[in-house]
Length: 317
Image 1 (spheres, one colour):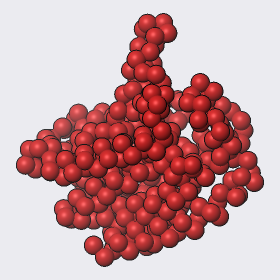
Image 2 (spheres, rainbow, N blue to C red):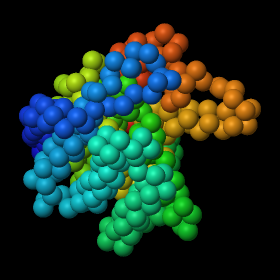
Image 3 (cartoon, helix red, strand yellow):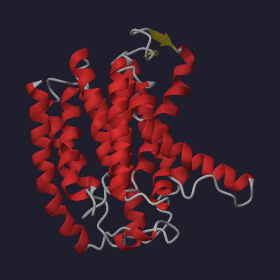
């Protein structure tokens, strides 16, 4: 418990220092956000706000995790995925913001990068960690299901699906940070009580995001960009998989799932009906914004829902 709290404090301190140092530098380099013209009108005034702020909290969480890595070697694969996905996000942000390529990294190249990192992680947890191919079933009293050969396709669905779900959640000031703090706290508590030896990196991510929120809460002075959102998606997925709890993402990470499904439904229906829409706009947080909700209201409701679902997730153990 003390080590977890130390990790939170150290990472918070680093993030709270790195952010104000990074923001002026990003402004100087004109690493500003580009807003969609068809999105909520309130978002247009955010154009030019520094993005790629995820660098600050990824760096903070990484430095803090390295302090504990010798005693807690299970941190290594989770840290590898988080940093690896952050690098993919950084390249995507760089192409969008610096090179003015509105599409950024092509979906195929982004997917390939994620696939390679996920494969290295898969080999490591099966060969080195030898965690097996069984997963915990929620509300079963701790029973597990051995997926055997089906574990491999299931693994990639969890990794890539979660990462993209978290990426879609990053669209309102403080939303992705707030939701992921609670998800990380959930897995941190489970790790602490279940002896998974991942608690320090949970504390590191929580602290880093808390420090980042000082500057990301509405009105945001900096956005995390794909650098941050892809890193967080990788972190959540890797944590759940190494703890054999990927099904719990559906519960505690329901917001991520809803965001991703809203995009899939919207795009599929739009194509099938030649222009009709299910939502006012996708991802779903924009649907509520266009319905009259303020950004702070969206963040507040989505965060409260996540908090309730984290309690439900703990009861489902």
